[in-house]
Image (tube, rainbow, N blue to C red):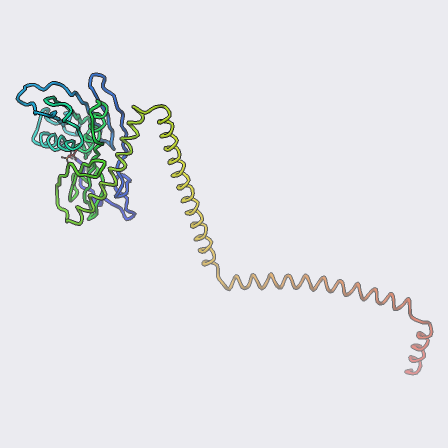
Amino acid sequence: MSDKPEKFIDENGIRLDGRRVDEIRPMTVEMGVLTRADGSCYLEWGNNKVLAAVYGPRELHPRRLQRPGEALVRYRYNMAAFSVEDRIRPGPSRRSTEISKVSGEAFEPVVMKQFYPSAVIDVFAEVLQADAGTRTAAINAATLALVDAGIPMKGLVAACAVGKVDGQLVLDLNKPEDNYGDADLPIAMTEDGDITLLQMDGNLTVEEVNKGIEMVREGCEQIFAIQKAALLERFGTAEEEEVLEDAELQAELMSEEEEVSEAAEEEDAVEESEDLEAAETEDPEDVEVEEAEAMFEEDVTEFEVNEEEAEEEAAEVNEEDIASEPEGEESTEEEGEKYEQ
Ligand code: ADP
């Protein structure tokens, strides 16, 4: 087992696996993977790999287990011996018995048991690879396996855990957070938001529990969307799938556009700050000197141009003067010179 990390959340609010505190791990689902089962679903959630299979409704034996007027929903959660680092002893354990009981009960309000009196609906959840949050992963897969089997349900059930590390609430705990965190609160709920499973390990204040439930609600909204997309893929018509693909494409484009505009904004901000830095690092005296030099150069060239023009004008004036000078005036000058002598 790995050692306890020094910090679970860095100064930017990012967790060890790169997620924000309110982000769930990536989830993929595939329905109808087992041909012998009436309904099935394979689900991957982060490093968790879970297979759910539903058999029934079918006749329940021994008969003494039958429930008058409604079907019995039997849920069996099991971790494969190879699903964790150290091999697990095969067969039921206290932990798996407890998880099976509470997970089965999580479906009580949605499965319409009254339609199948005395029958049994068997749900098997096999954890093939465990990495924290296996009971919630199994519930998410089992919901789709039940729908795949055609069991009438009032709606879907989604499940997700919230916990506490570094004094902060975090959604969908990963393995180190689950192992070394201060609390683990797995919750399952219906689409109406009714909580059908709530367990708690560790310590949380009432405010933290309430905030945690709200965080799980947000997470479950995302899980419901993933489940509905999987249902549409399996049972939807080509047109419905097209609509979904268009919506997904639209959402992708929008998020890409957002990313691009965010990147552009960041670039602008970086450029602005660089300009600002450059302006700040420039000595204001240097700027003044440069400006003065530029002005001086302008003046000098203007002056040179003016000098040239003045010379040209003077030359023209002289030529004109000489050309227009009356002869008599010359003799007057000569006369004046004579007087001086
Ligand atoms: P959950 O998987 O629903 O979070 P727990 O909190 O009991 O249930 O377990 C957390 C994780 O600890 C499991 O997902 C699994 O990775 C690991 N784990 C549970 N039981 C065992 C076991 N007997 N041996 C090894 N690892 C186990």
